[in-house]
Length: 190
Image 1 (cartoon, helix red, strand yellow):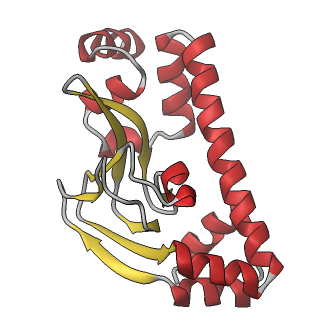
Image 2 (image 1 turned 120 degrees about the vertical axis):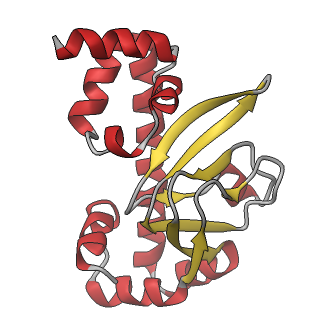
């Protein structure tokens, strides 16, 4: 496992090296080509995936439009988490923005790890808490920040996304039109 990726993951789960290595040994590699899906709405969410190389976006489909939930780059865990933990079909989609490499683990394998060592169960809880706080922060930002403030926060906290994600997807993520994003960007340049 790449040391930078392990370091990034351990910012969330903080597992001892030997347990993190065991966790990665349980995961299976998967390649997804640009434009392909890891998971589509209506499919059973059987795995949690970790992006080791590449980029994805997570979105909901509404009246023919993609409503972007988030962007997932290296070090990001992917799953429709409520569907995963409840063994149900997914409500969202994960589409590759680039040719990507993932490591996946099934619910059955993950549950076995939880039973093997309490540190794994704690790591699972920390991942769930991290996902929840990220979701809640996005909801709060959508309610309380202006579109310009949301864009400024995105470029401050995740500037690498601007080079890897098309502007129309960034606009959807910010809950604005691509035209409005262009106006915001134009004001920021001058």
